[in-house]
Length: 199
Image (cartoon, rainbow, N blue to C red):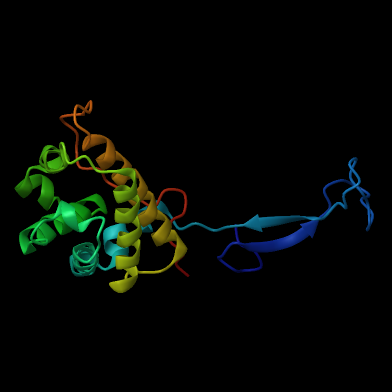
């Protein structure tokens, strides 16, 4: 539905919440009644929606984010102990492959690096703390800025959504004696409720 020919969410018109509402009318509780603002949004057909991988800029962009993230981790007092001696180029490449696949790119992590069971094995018995989980998510969000990934709210909402979901799962899976799902596919993350705006 278009609003005066515009394809973005914006107020289309004001309408009264009840017939005959007069200016200055009060609710039953004595609060002033305000007009309701009606919104109209036009969404693109789902077949035209790019993957998060495509929108981010592909493997090069995601690789930059992962590198900037681990550069921050190596200087971080809370997270660097998880990587004694620093974060290797191989580790960075594997995590880049994971994120690319999760965001809709090539299935390299599944096909070449062992898929979900391999990622699970990397986190088993690490004993990640709640503070480390939060720091991980925070530094990755900053790394997305450092790497110049898209800053639109739709992409960043999807990115942070995955960070929250993934880090909470890693926190659980890292605890000694945790009840783990041994087999699962690599998750495929999408836009959720807010696909990107494209004029």
